Each structure stands twice: as C-alpha cells, then as structure tokens.
Length: 183
Image (tube, rainbow, N blue to C red; front, side):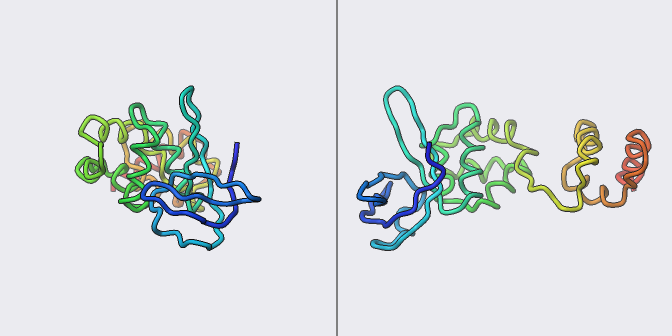
C-alpha cells in the first residue's frame, strides 16, 4: 500500500493525472485534475482501492481530504466513484458541516447522491467528523458520550465541557453538565 507518492505530473486527464516517480507513471484518480500543473512536483496522499476486477489509486492534495474520503467510502452504498466527485464540488468543511447539521439538500447536490444515500451518510457519519478540540480533555470523553446519548448536540457539549471540573466524579460531572445545558 502507498501512503503518498511524490513526483512530477506528466499528464492531466478530466478524471485523473499521471504522476511520474522514478520512471514509473502512476494513474491517480483525483477530485480536481486541472488544479495540478504539468511538469510540477507534488506530494499526493493516496488510497489504494482494490477489488477483484480493479486496482485504482485515488489521490488527495491534503491529509484532511484523504481522511474525509475514507470516512465517506465507509458509508454503506457510497463507493470511491461517488465520494470523489463530492470532494471535487464541495469543500471539506462544507461537507462536514452539512453532515453535522443533517443538511440533506446540500448532500443531494452532489452527483449520484440521492435522498437515500444522503440520509445514510448522515446516519453513519454524524458526530464522527468533529475535530478534537483542545479544550476537551481525554477524561471528558466518557462525559461527552453520556451527553450525546441523552440527545444533546456536539456543539452544545463543546461549549460547556471546559466549565466542568475534572476532579468531580463522572456522576457529578453529568449533573453539572446538565445544569449548564439547561440554562
């Protein structure tokens, strides 16, 4: 498996680029091929998609883009060929925000994403795309999980967690959190 490939772009096609590295040309499917320039060097983060009838490389300009792609293809019914155009036409933060806010209309604007797949994306990924905030300590993960299971939103939980004293027992942390959330 390849984590990334450094090389020179020698060909640009509407759906892929060819990246030359040590006299080998790698065909890499990318979201926006025309964002690359011929004869320029790039480091492309890659994902190897292997099936019995195909071996494809998918490439990304950033680790964040690759991470979102991997989360998207983990959704039931959403493969690499549907996830890549999402990255081409939407921003990473826009896609993450749409999933967290359950914005089905935003997700349906992408090619081949219908109502059923959009709902599946939200079901599978909501709450899993939020970046770790430095204010949320490891000790508060259990508290966060309890509050999420009670139906509170991640954004609301993030706001109150810094105000909870870490030295309290989990039970008392929950009581304090509920008081703050109900204000």
